[in-house]
Amino acid sequence: MSTTTALGSRGEAIAAAHLTDAGLRVLDRNWRCRDGELDIVARDGSAIVFCEVKTRRGTGFGHPVEAVTPAKQRRLRLLAQRWLAAHDEHAPDLRFDVVGVLVPPAGLPLVTHLPGAFS
Image (cartoon, rainbow, N blue to C red; front, side):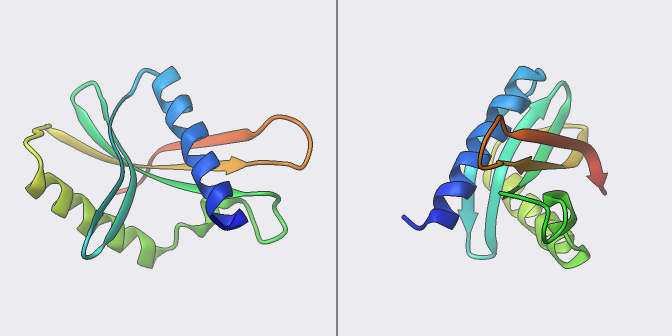
């Protein structure tokens, strides 16, 4: 496993714990289909939440949440449609969250959760 892959896996685990602590119920992690991957799918009350996780060691290339570009948002919307078609989950509301995880060389990770980051 590469160090980048290990960092991403660690960030996703931190994000999942953060979301669970915030009261969300994780339904799926690292769900894949032919069009890509959803990092975390969760339920928050009546809403299904599709959560993109970005992890970095520092902000030299910007904050992790800045990496969710309009093109990435379009792909996440498509993946959400695919996930909903493949699962028997019904919700009146859908939400797209972004979780940025900064993992510094020393100290605790810093989590930034943006609920409803885009629609």
